Length: 459
Image (cartoon, rainbow, N blue to C red):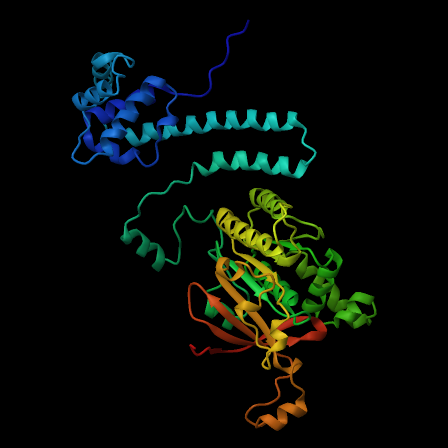
């Protein structure tokens, strides 16, 4: 029978760490945060390291050969590790603790490899179970791998001097962004970007409006601007519209050709030239569209993580929140939406990307004379307003008031009829002030343009 191959390990590096701790009481500060007892392959070395950590966690205790031997004796494990003589052996093999962090990295890396082997076996077992829910099995497999990867993300305290340096250099800590990653996603609307500082990574941004007010158009405009201007990679989950409908809207907005002509292919030769030019621009945009009409959060998470691994996502857009399926645990729809928003917020943090989720409004907004939306109007709200970092509403006064009624109530010279003017209301902003931003909506080409911004008075 062939000899069983041992998993990756480095006993010499493990012993060098223990020896360093025994000769230098301060060495523990360099490894305690990142190195765990389970990272040691040798049971003997693991037991000694646990004893060192036990001393480290007590006030006024030092780590040396005598104190560690006493701690092991207290735990009735001194003889198990080979007695005090083995501790002397470890000290004699390490002349200096100078390289303890280097040894710790070796031990940590080999531990990751062993966890990867274990993960492979767990994934193999999932395959043999042959569950009828293939999507759930794939998600479980991804979770297993993600847990291996997440152990590598530990970050210690960073001196404020370093943080200040990164701030004034316009950068962020390297553990936060991948190489070449965009710090924040610009919507392309100056006033909105000024107010939000762009769409921030890990944020859940909810964009809500009544039907036919342009929330999908605004989301697509943001996707277009970010992908073309910043080369941001966009994952668009369109549960309501097909991929063809998404493309038609993007083409109309980019070309300036009436959307109905684009949809019906009723355009002139001049329009065709504009559409072909727009197609050339959009074809270079890193936008990935999934138009599956039935999606659970687990499906969105699985697909987003796969694209993020392969390409690196900068922004996720979901159109729209209330169409996401629940997990079928017989909860009320409000509870399901609450679970969905919490899961989306977790996904935003997990992938370190902003998630822009579109949402419907309840009919309560119609009952108010002003028709101006409020946070409580979020349909099946549950915890939407609690989980969201930013909530944005779209309001169109011209759809609630005719030009004749407006003229009777306003001085039209100073307050002209707001035809096509959309109020973009930042109703919640975890990181900054609330504002009302005006954009011009060109309905025939489903495109928003910049206008101006004004502060919202506190009430």
